[in-house]
Amino acid sequence: MLTWSEESLAIQEAVRRFVDEEVRPVLDDIEHEGVPPYDVMRSMFRTFGMDEMARENFKRQLDKKTSGEEESAKERRPNSQVGMTLIPIIELCRVSPGLVTSMGVSTGLAGGTIMKLGTPAQMERWGLDLLTLDKVGAWAITEPDSGSDAFGGMRTTAVRDGDEYVINGSKTWITNGPYADTIVLYAKLDDGSEGNPRDRKVLTFVLDKGMEGLVQSKPMRKMGQKSSPTGEVFLSDVRVGKDRLLGESEEPKGGGRQSARDNFVTERAGVAAMSLGIIEECEKLSIDYAKQRNLWGKPISEYQLIQLKLANMEVARLNVQNLVFRHIEAVSQGEPTTMAEASAMKLYSARAAVEVANEAIQLFGGNGYISEYRVEQLARDARVLQIYAGTDEMQIVAIAKDLLNR
Image (cartoon, rainbow, N blue to C red; front, top):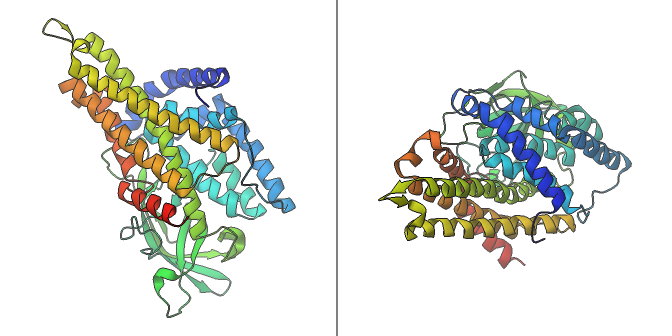
């Protein structure tokens, strides 16, 4: 794949028009006034039929699960279909990367985990509403003392009590946590054994807002991605039945640790698309500003140092775009993304997005430091791409381990 198809460009133009008409006018309310982002996200789903696509995909997956048919890892999908999932990500990230974070966690991580691990009854109970954004989902794995050591440092526990489990602990940096209707939560099984707690089974539960003992905090005050509400989740003797244990088994196929690792791969590959949107918008804003801003009697675009900044932005844009195109081509051919490849995509693209956004601020000078010119917001929003879904340092470890274990 060398460029977008005509069909993809038509979709891109339609999404771009929606963003200009529906997202930009309410952006300040979402970014600075604490207005939850979910209404505008649902509007996009309805406008482009993404809710109907989700229903069709849900039915297909449910039929396969009911019939016992395995989901093929080599399933081919047309480029246009894969592109349709990434183009809205790219276009939204030109304006508000936080919207993409919230949407991706709700539909992809929370909804996707239920669709992969859940029984047909669990899929119907929780999955469809998350895939269509009728309900908001959160994916709770990170804890105050675990961070990059998500599994080993996990202290949230689930203790068997007859036919039920009692869950205690806390989670932090949970996207959609303050408003989530449904929370997919990971906990260590505490069966009273004397083995190393780091090696205990990791179980996956589904919780609903309002359950006794479950507390969802107010949104945190953050540096960036303010359009993506982030909070903490506290669990004090939360009692759940087996119907809330995904797969209704302590050892579902692909469950626990493997489920989380698979989600990391998907999430890291998605960061490249997010980075591309940020880079494209920063480059566009910088080009327009360089043509209009005069200094010493001529546009700053005529100065070589400014041209160097623009040239470096274009190199970054091309490189990240090629990573995205390569990913689209691989997915369309049914080729799974390895951990090394997903981590490499995230490592490079996140760094590129941060560098381009910072250079955009430098090009704008003092104007780049105030919110009116938008590059300030994009720089703040880009910074977390080097932290969430695994820090840069953890991406390096993941790439090396995957390469060395081949």
